[in-house]
Image (cartoon, rainbow, N blue to C red; front, side, top):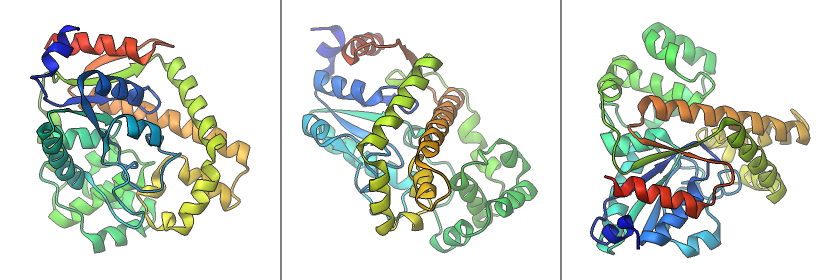
Length: 314
């Protein structure tokens, strides 16, 4: 029995596994959970929605039977979900897992959720439903212009291809009368040492690109188009957050006749690669984590042995 597994029976503090899409987090988390008696808590802003299965690479029924998973399939498509709700639910789940004598393993790629969980939510106010609806119906360019006028710093830094982020920034400014950047500065600028049990997985860019391309091909082969068609009936188009999920948005455009299927597949691959790059940038800039690069073809069990050594050293 390795050193970490020996101490795991008494050290049940949560483990955090982060990283970009398709890096291999889920396989590693499953192997780790089986090794140390853990349960997995999803840190994914889209896996919370029921029905968004194929496009979010949600754990399969077989994987959920192997290891308990939490914070997936907890919202209807017509419901809103944010970081504050995630933190509240995650804290409750951690208590339940610890009470069972098991180890919580957080696994996902939503950096803001990790940040909120580990460092708090900052001073930003809760979402205002009426204001949020008004902003989501406004043209993106109009919101960006308001952001440029009221908070130039955030306007320069924000991902302008992500309407959800823009809407939230403008929402906070309107609710508080203060710059979004000023409210987040203390939260984001402090110098921190990497957390001992917070690991961020990465790969060689060419390897990650190949894995992303393969994943997207598999998603379409498994029926992403049909899944999206059924989700539209259930309200996908009305949920501006869920509709931003990569894959679904592009397939909706395909179903509306904007482009052919082959072009849509390639577009989803490109958008996913761009998203993975943004995730890596976010974790390097904001995530106080230890980095672990996964070589091409390395089995999850081999990765697990290296994770055990990293955790045992702390």
